[in-house]
Amino acid sequence: MGTVEFHQAKAAEFLQRADHAIGDRDPPQAAVALRRALTHAITALAVHDGLNHNSRRQLENVLHSNIIRERLKRDHLKTVRQVHSLTDHLSSADRSADPAVTLRRMRRRVASFINDCAAIIAGQPKPVQPHKRWLRDPNHRKPDAFETTQDILSLPNLDDIKRRFNLSHVPLAASPDPHGWYRHGMIPRPCSCHRELWQFPKDESFIILSPIWRRALEKTYWIKLPEPLQLRV
Image 1: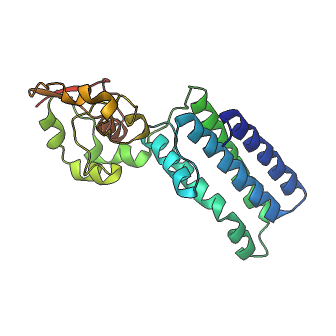
Image 2 (image 1 turned 90 degrees about the vertical axis):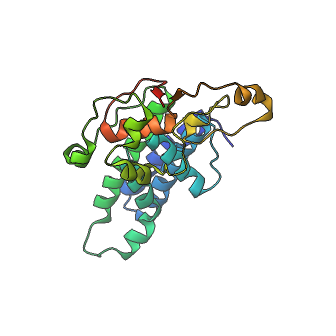
């Protein structure tokens, strides 16, 4: 398994191995070292967040969870995918191209990813800047306020928001979350150990907005919403 500190140390170690391999002009070894450095950085983040990390798919889920929570840049997904295909890319690349240029560029991106993961683990995630495309899109203008559920349901780009953040089956109303499922971008499920929370009578005149929806709206409009956000029904 390994602790957070173990995987962070391994990430730094393999990044240093990549530096040596690039200097020795050994592209295959450099590509392997970069991939392992990145994998250990993601694993450290997974251990910190309490998420599974036994497969590449589970590691990508760790990334998506932190991207949804606006703790990581979406660009890091591209870095992860390119690192995993780096060996094949180098073997099929134009022989006239210098592989050291590609490796040094990838090394900078992996180092940036490792630093961003370390900042999250330290409790000081780096700010994620909005993409210019979202700032230009008139459908993503900042709304005046969210005071009722109808304010959200009547958004002109509601379907786009649902598709982008996979919200089709996510209810607007927050559920009891004694085990912190929302922190990982998941919907809480009833549990026998906190049955009283699910049986507690509800006020039908208002809801608390689901944290998953709140983060999606914040990311879409680049605003900060109250936490928790109470909405009239």
